[in-house]
Every structure is written in C-alpha cells, then in structure tokens.
Length: 149
Image (cartoon, rainbow, N blue to C red; front, side):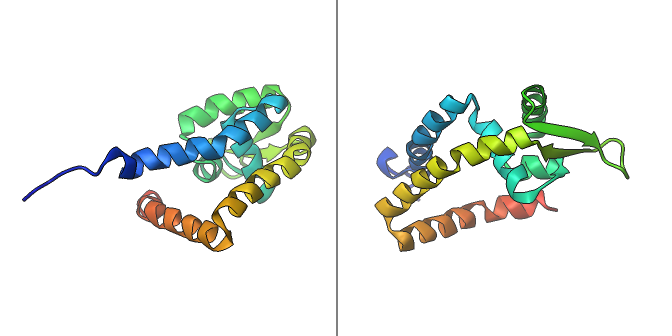
C-alpha cells in the first residue's frame, strides 16, 4: 500500500491555517483600534448573541479552552467589559454577562465586522460561502458530538 501525504499546497491543515490568517488579518486590524484580542472579541460576541451564560458554554461557543478563558475573563472584568456572578444553584459555576461598555465595543465595531464578512462573501459568492460554512461544520461535527457526550 502506497501511503503518501498530499502536497502542502493541498494539505487541509495548512490550507485551514492559511484561510484563518486571511480571514483574521482584517479582523485583527479592527480589534487593534479597540484594544481587544481575538479571544476577547469572541467572548463579547458570544455574550452579546446568547446573553448571560455559564463559563463552560462561553468557552465552547467561543472555541476557547477553560484555563485560557479564566485568564481572559480576569482581564475583561478589569476592563469593565463583562461581569461575573456565582450561579444560584451551583456556587462552583459562574454566569458571565456583557456590560454596557462591552456591548458598546460590539456596537462600535459591528459595521466594520459586517463589512469584513461581506467582503469574504463577495469574493466567494453567496453559494460558495454557505457551502464552505457547511463543509467546515461537517469537519467539526465529530468533535462536537464527542465533547457533548
């Protein structure tokens, strides 16, 4: 049996990294003006979209590891972007909420973030863009099902 690796120009891991960098470059520029990291932006986006929630849910939805999230939350709390309170039923759990200042950061950047997304959609075309999202979701579906068990 002949086992060979694909060319690096057709390597899924390498192409995913290149695609991530192409997508994130304009987002990083946008965030630099706000003094946010990519991870902080994702936390704010999740809290803005889903409302108050448990740290585990935020970590999952923002694609962050819990130990990393703990450090990120400390900084975001100090900046006044989020608040944390203990869960009523389980004192070991924390509920995270976006503050008005955190929502203001989202509101101040929403037009530019939407323009970045629209530019990617325009480059790919709506059908290809949606197909890409569906395919990427398929790639991560197995991992999602394993972590929800």
